[in-house]
Image (cartoon, rainbow over the protein chains, first blue to last red):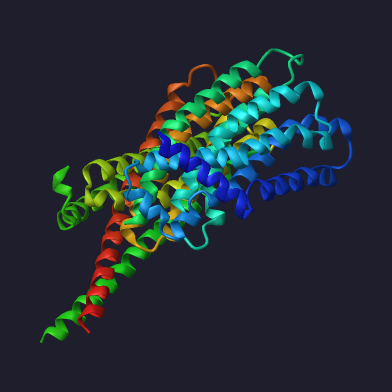
Length: 222
Length: 52
Length: 240
């Protein structure tokens, strides 16, 4: 157990030191959100309608683009080999690395989202549901991104392939995430069941994703 | 089928696309198979040549 | 199942079965097309466009069935290490992708006269679209990895991840649509489908299935040959 925490801490510190982590992901997040009013026009009513969905989509893409950090470095310099041979099961290693990614990239993005929402006229009453939903949903996003990263870790040009593999897996998270971001007053309560489903997806991913990621890594480490 | 009916063109298009795609799939699959079989035969005969 | 393990044995059986499979496929298509275009009546509401159902629904059925075959083959590959399981999964994918593409295109052609739009994001079409992406990703991963053994191992994971995803996506889009759209479901000529339209549908479904079977057997034969060729080439380089 202490190994796992040590691993999480190590990954976070490494990520912070090297950059290309939360900072760059936030920058990307900001840019994609900014492109929306530029592309769609400044109609405030329109922007308010699409704001939750747009923020979620930007979140998905930002998490995905920072995903290759999860395993690439350690794979390249052989550290992953050592981890695989060590006492901790590889499944827990991948879980720890995805947790580090969540803490250092996805969660900060989820927290930053409402702030960026101001740029696209996000309805203030949906700030709390949105942040909650994104904090919960981003767990699944990091875990699934981990699968994509593990599957493409040995490939030279795996970038676009990760997107093709992981984005279909993101579709349910996106759908329930946007539903859960609905503001409390507007119509029947679909936010609560959606939030519960997001929680269920997160729990399922916590169990299944490390198994898949570890299996994929083993094929590359052989 | 009544070919003069409204939207008959859609029906024709649907069947035409289906036929085209399935035919292409058929041709591609059989052509690949034939190609590989030729290759295998060539390699086998070269091997037998070299054994002599 | 073990008797198919040896590729030579499988090839013998496949080659023996293929002529019959092709013949059955042709017969089924002949009967099915007659049923679809001549025998089945035009729908009360949709008119002649209901005939698109006879090429759209079988394509959709096969798109799903083939992915299931891929997932099952992947499971067999993981658990039993059956040598032909990976071959079965790999070769099924392009065929399934073609059926999926057809389901989408014919669905669109059916939707335009029915709903007035070339595309709607209803649960079925959206799930089909995601399925196509899953197919493309699976095919791409086989092509991206050079070593066949490693590619097989990774592909199994990708197939199973996608397979788990399909029902979740269907469920989520269904739910999403029930919130946002009044029911605009494809109505196949009333609450229950008339027998005169059911039997051509089933025959076409069988025709598509047998077509897949034939194409799959041929593709597996091709893939086995390709692997043999690769082995021979590597051996020759070793000899020199």
